[in-house]
Amino acid sequence: MALVYPRKISLAQTPTPLQYLERASEKWGRGHRIWVKRDDLTGCTLSGNKVRKLEFIMAHAIDNGFDTILTCGGVQSNHCRATALAGAQLGLGVHLLLRGDAPEDIEGNLLLDHLAGAAVNCYPSAQFVSEIDALFSQWQEHYAAKGHKAMVVPTGGSDGIGAWGYIAACEELASDFSANNIDSAHVVVATGSGGTQTGLTLGAALHQLPATVWGINVCDNAEYFLNKVASDTADWQQRYPDAPAVDIQPRVLDGYVGQGYAMASPEIFELIAELSRLEGLVLDPVYTGKAFAGMLAEISGGRFEQCRDIVFVHTGGLFGVFPQRSGFNYTLAPTGTP
Ligand SMILES: *Cc1c(COP(=O)(O)O)cnc(C)c1O
Image (cartoon, rainbow, N blue to C red; front, side, top):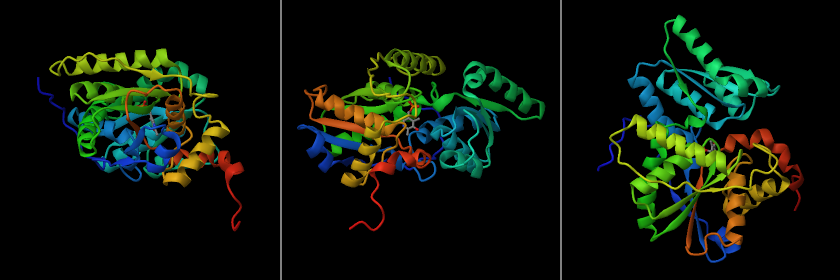
């Protein structure tokens, strides 16, 4: 059965390049070729993976008469920043419910949220975790009372609608593979709210991409993400009953969260600096740095032995580097050192 996509609004700069990392492959590849799908290049301020999901989410919002988007995430959420800017671009209101106390310095993604004119409320973590559904309902009622219609978009834009973003990206990967003589590959991606992994896993099956998709979790654990991918997939199947039936087997590589979400060890900061020097490729300490470190550890452990090609999906996150700049202090040379 043919795959019929729902409408999307073009927001992302796609297709993104698939780039071969020659020096990184030599250094860490153990005979593998390491490639990067440059989804950090989906836009300047809209950069990263979230905009691919938002292309479908925003079309759904507009087609269903919503004029406001309510969504949530951490204070430095890339998803919230992309939503704020996409909303401004499309003339929709955006209201962000952020987890954590309001920081003294408004920087990184949060600065862009404000520049984009989003309404922002910060809630202490414990309250956010226990009350987020009630908060969404309260704000939805608030907008309804003013004659507006607010759509709730879950964390990360990860649901059955957002899944289309990476289902579609698998078509790009299919042509990247043929253009580069990749006949089978492991695809590795950071997983945080599970939607990118869901889309890639579904998309690989739907487009017969010769790829095994691995999520490297940056919070929670393997069980959480296996369930999350299953429930996002069920949501997708329920919303789009005419889509082909697919059997998927999500795969999670657990063990690389470290101290916790958004907390990176000195080794992660060092790896980010090293890859920046080696390839001019900048990762972030919350998602891609941990996932890249996990991929290298799994290469060392022989996980991908049967297959020459490994594709790392660079999901963006650059604005999250700046608020964590102190993590690099020890590795930065003083200016003017010969
Ligand atoms: C959100 C995000 C991820 C994780 O994607 P999910 O779809 O939420 O699992 C990975 N990398 C970056 C930079 C992100 O912002």
